[in-house]
Length: 272
Ligand SMILES: Cc1cc2nc3c(=O)[nH]c(=O)nc-3n(C[C@H](O)[C@H](O)[C@H](O)COP(=O)(O)OP(=O)(O)OC[C@H]3O[C@@H](n4cnc5c(N)ncnc54)[C@H](O)[C@@H]3O)c2cc1C
Ligand code: FES
Image 1 (tube, rainbow, N blue to C red):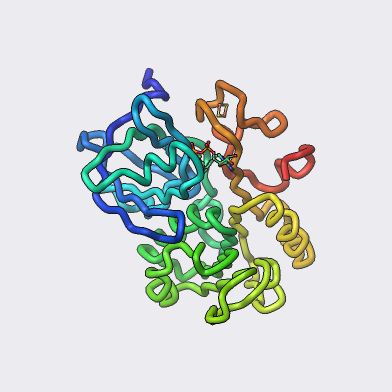
Image 2 (tube, protein in one colour):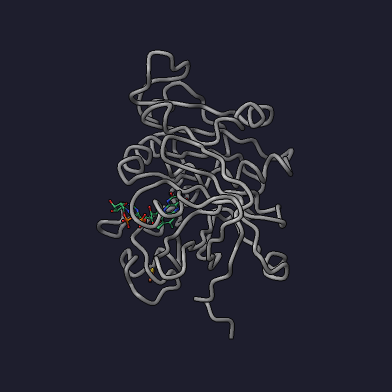
C-alpha cells in the first residue's frame, strides 16, 4: 500500500513575485519517476513544507495538462509560509499529495463556466483557466470574476493579456488606488454589470462571507444548487481524513472536498 504521508523532494525552478505577500513557485520532483506519475485535477491541493520545520496545504495552480512541473502560489501568513518565502531557486520543498476532490471538470465539459475567485482563493482558478487555454472547447465559454481588496493583492496579473484572448476576465477591487482602471466594489457588484451566460456551472473559491453574498446572487439568477461548486479552506493537519481537524458536519474537507457542490453542504450548520 502506498503510504499517503510520504513526502517527495521537489526543487524550486522559478520564483515569481505575484502580489505584495504572495509568490508563485514552479517545482519539479527530484525523482523523474515521481514527476512523471504526478497527476491532479483542477481544485486539488498538495501539502508542502520543510523537514523538521512544518508544512501546510496549498492549491496546485499550474495546468493539470503540464506534466514536467507543478506550481503553487504561497501567501505569507505565518511561520511556515514565511520560511517558504525565504527559499531560493534550487532549494527544495517536501511535497505530499495531491489530495482531495477537485472540480468535476468532466461533468462540466459541455457547460459554460463562471469562475469566481476572492483574494487568495483565486489561486485554484488559474488551473481551470490554463487548462482551458491549452485545450479550448467549442462547447464552453469562460467568464471569470476576480475580486481583491486593492491592486496590491492581484495575482497572475502579467498573464491577464494572454488570458483575455480566450476568456472574459472581470476585475473588481473594494479599496483600490485612484489609478485602478477596473470596477470598484465587492465581487458581487459584478453581477450588476455582467450578463451571466446561459447553461452555466459555477466554480468558486474565497472566504465564507464571499460565499454568503455570491450564493444569494446565484439563487436570483436561478442557478441550481447542484451546478454550484465551492472550494473550502479549513485548518488541516493530516490531509488524509484521519485527524478530524477539517471536519464540516460529517465531511472532511481534505478527503471529501475541498470542493463540494452547494447542495451537499448547504444544510450543514457553520459550513458557510
Ligand atoms: C485546502 C487548502 C488550500 C490552500 N491553498 C492555499 C494556497 O494556494 N495558497 C496559500 O497561500 N494558502 C493556501 N491555504 C492556506 C495555507 O495552508 C495557510 O495559510 C498556511 O498553512 C499557513 O501556515 P503558516 O504556518 O505560515 O501560518 P500559521 O501560523 O499557521 O497561520 C497564520 C495565519 O493564517 C491563518 N490560517 C492558517 N491556515 C489557514 C487556513 N487554512 N485558512 C484560513 N486561514 C488560515 C491563521 O489563522 C493565522 O491567522 C490553503 C489552505 C487549505 C486548507
Ligand atoms: S486534515 Fe486531518 S482529517 Fe482533514
